[in-house]
Image (cartoon, rainbow, N blue to C red; front, side, top):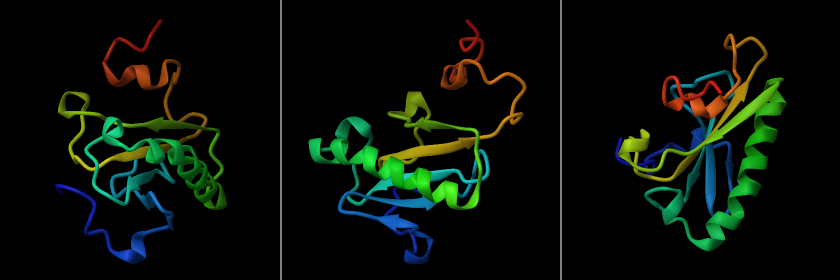
Length: 121
């Protein structure tokens, strides 16, 4: 997939002037959502100032969508910027990943675990 421009309308859970939200087709946990720009931008650093300012509103909308169906105990919010950082679709998307007590043995370090052995401190 080169971008998210061909997402069927029925998959879209929310849309505003800057973003739309869908369920991730390869969810890390139940309720994993993607917040995607309406206009293709490569990554977070390519967003316009207005898009950057609107992103927290879309993240809150995504959180509310999750809470209507699930009862997570926490969340990870993540963006991969560049192939070296793991980005595979070069159309801005922000992951909202619900976290649940017991979903991993020791969650301490959270996103720091993106590089093995660097999450423990």
